Length: 244
Image 1 (cartoon, rainbow, N blue to C red):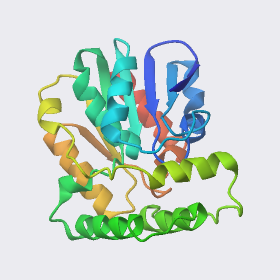
Image 2 (cartoon, one colour):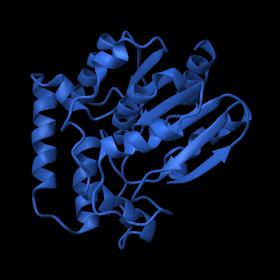
Image 3 (spheres, rainbow, N blue to C red):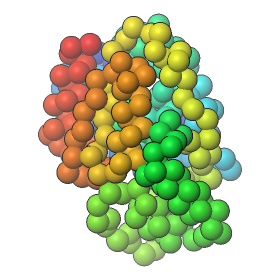
Image 4 (tube, rainbow, N blue to C red):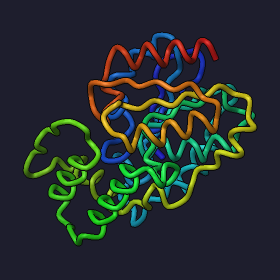
């Protein structure tokens, strides 16, 4: 994986979600490099890495776990949040804290009508046969965005098109439950954040917070795009890192 590093100080590993690579996803968090050493990998399939035939959260979790240095604060957004949950369980002795922002582990909230419905609709979208990246992106955005999404350019820029094609090849993130049992036995602090726009996301974040005895915050105002909610999200992260 390509990795970018900014700043100096305690380690903060930022794991991006789908569609955009690391530095694009976390561009609003780069100001934290004034106080922290930000480690931002670009996951397999995302520029500047080459395309991949398949994207799998468990495979990525092993890659991430291998690069975690001692006393690292791990932060995962969306699909990256699912990866962070698996990765932290593989290297708990090196984790200083764990933050997950709207990880789509909806199976944790199975039985909640909104979570069941969103899983069904997303599975239908993946299996609908849509192979044109821009059309797939628009449909995906309407399902998970939680706000009016920006109309993507036509044609998509090459980096964005590659990110969407990687999204289209993802193993669905609720295919296997994260190892909450193992994580519940760890001692590092944990934080779950939702965007307050979706009952499905809120429900699974609540399950994570209860099962892991984690702090739980709702940061509303930008739908699923919580990292773009600045300065609020940066203030929450900074306070949590320092307390941890």
